[in-house]
Image 1: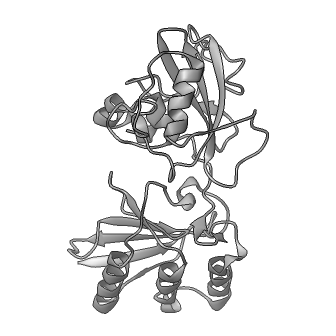
Image 2 (image 1 turned 90 degrees about the vertical axis):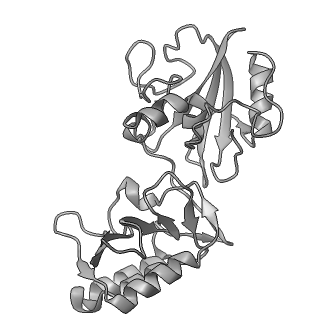
Length: 278
């Protein structure tokens, strides 16, 4: 049995790794179990960036811990289809850093301590809430598992939430839409806590932007603005993609080739931790 911690920080050289003692394994398990608040958000470090990107913990035949855990920005991701845990501070990451011992030199330790104290963009305290990165374009998350691909639709994808319910606007807010019209579907989405906004011109402090279109009297569809400044979408039970009806990358959902979805309804601000979709 072994538990290995990796600090994700370098680009050109291997990241620092070290093993935990039995007592440290027990304490880590206790600390994770003590975080009760849940979130559907993912640690921003998984997107990849320069500098501090969090810790991963790999366990081999260890009953107290999940086989793989990723920790960053207060979020504990167990790499499962269940909700993650989220803390209001960096105490767990600071504790993991302290377990490194001689695995790192002190200049590197001081750098990470500064990031955890709020000096870096990876972890930002906002009165107990988190500033969360815009979701990356990650089609494998939606396409590789046949159940996820077939049981989640464009509205799931736009919200970046896997519910396996083929989510419908308004169902999470208590009243589903009643007609395939911009105003009707849009009002239902607002009941799910989507907030209508003007044309996006910058990245929001929290969440991300989504766009609604309608095939008049027939169907609805949603697009999502990813962290690469391009839009992507998931057509029903089919794979997530970043190209339009003509096979081109989507820079603007208003002007891209949308096939029969001719009605552009508008933009919405989606904060996944706030939206209720079902």
